[in-house]
Length: 474
Image: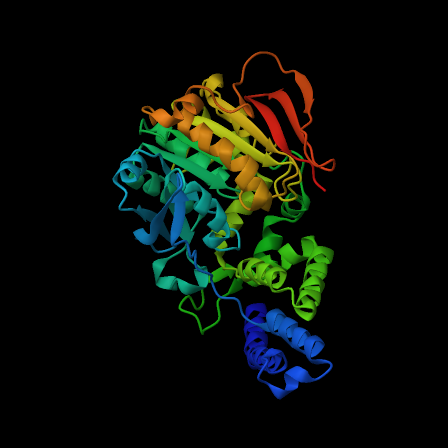
């Protein structure tokens, strides 16, 4: 019933949203007589804000049509490599007429980015993909909105998610390097563990970023909600049926609008300030800041429904039973055993200010993957980065991505000669795991603006040694 009420509200607000948009233009277009009225900027800004608050947000596009590789602009074409009922595997194919660059790109590592199925579309990782394309061949999982999948297709469980990941890895090939962001760290680790147990080739590397491998460590508000409420409570209160105006009518889902409400509720003051700043930017004519706001919320407000079976499985397996870390997770009659992974190098990444996956949750993967040699295990702490900062924004581009790039390059069998230095010796932020646990702090000052400095913190952790390097938050 709640979903039907939401759809009715959306239908009622849709004409109002369009009216607000059209009226805003009447007061902002130079050829309109209303443009010259004294209150025009304020009225136009207010109507534009009303439009943004009441409109429906469709799934955005990646819009990655080109990227600079080694100083040369190359074209990028998005292709569908594989189609499954609940997911598409996308490939971003690069093209250039420069023969030396073409040869170089052919030798670059292959990366499979497993995007989260947790409310937002895979386009949330647009900036992740754009940076990776500079040095890699890139695939990404593009999960389908469950309300668009007919009930005839059947249910989709967490076990099916794991099976999808395995199929994608086999499709790309054993030379793949897997990157999982947030939620998929758990099913990706399970998928690779099962492949290792079966004697299948496993990826060359796996990079896990801000995910709840062990949600018991430094629990956040998200973790606490999942742990405090019973499984039955979630099934009775947040699971609803898709209305009749969608292809998936009747399918039981966890609606995207409920997840979006939860996102907003975590930081309501921040979002209110952001919208107020947007209103002021419109009034002052600061188009660049206003456009940044639009781009961010076009992505942030576009959400998808999750299959009820998958959502409830995740609550139980990851946040209530802790099946992966307790060693009692069975998929298709086979026990998930991360200790069977031997040939895949491991990098875990956490954000210092992450309020979704707390400190130590992702790093716990090192305690599970005990058969991976210590010199192939690494951990990186992104100082000053929140959850989204580890895969998008300035800290991702300047601090996190170089570590990911060099880690992958260091574990390729035949690295490009230009990458020989980084391949033979990982960057200073990634140190090999060895010896007794110790903590050592070094402060490095640079001759830059007084308000800026970089701090390098080196600490040995169980299963991997970490070195956090990043700008001090202002």
